[in-house]
Length: 362
Image 1: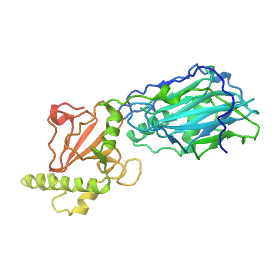
Image 2: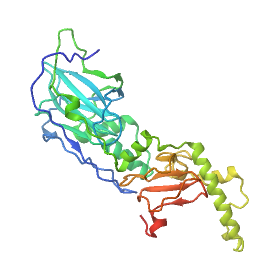
Image 3: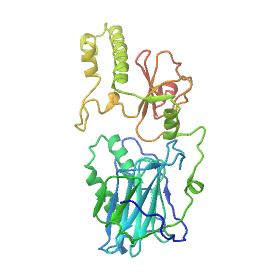
Image 4: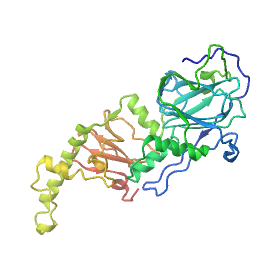
């Protein structure tokens, strides 16, 4: 059912809190803490036991055509109508792209707190200032950050329902009570809206309040998204990675031939291998039990092919290292890359990192 946003407006100040996400150390031993806090502060112990956690996820946003952060990703908006006069509400909103969540509520509905979490900026609008609200910035929220940590630690992620319940317990002290898992641009939480029920919300001019001018020279993940948008780079596929692995196999064969004077047991076992066998050898099994090809150098996640030689490699990256496949006719950068960047050279199969330029381990 569509939200009726034409009802009376509650004139109140808008409260937004956007968290700052520190870098995750490689091989982190403990899952990341959420760096942001509710504004105003949320007293979890004081939440009434009858309060219900409503989760909203998988809803397609209406694209706005302008950004809300420096991520170089187009933002969207989703309207959420909360109709729960029978029980207080704790709202858990999960988004993908940068999202403005416009929240409205019916007469008699009491929203106790809202947490918006996602891989990109999540901002909540429409609520009076006394409602505790927490969102995240373009560096990602707790679910995304904990997923990155699990990948860096080569751990299996729990099922989505388990992770979402963990998130709910972490911030609201109780599991999810009910879910809305799909929709287009607007959803109703709780019971359906009756023909006479009207929505209350905070009137905010979205573009004037939230639009952010894009930085011409962004850092970190924003630099990668800018490169993708302007077609300086593209995401790599299995064919791209196999092509580079075969070049690396040639390099290994060459180095093996140069080592022929060594004792047999010291010569790497690649000399007589055919291409497919070499690809198998260069694609080791994953420690976590995931299928081969979903970890290590053969994994295409966070791997890009450079399309223009004047692409500036990103700086101040966090999380897992990012790999760039450099075509054979492109010049090799003269200065060392960011310590999270790995260059895969199609010319000869080498891997270049900051250590190769400076002699110091990143």
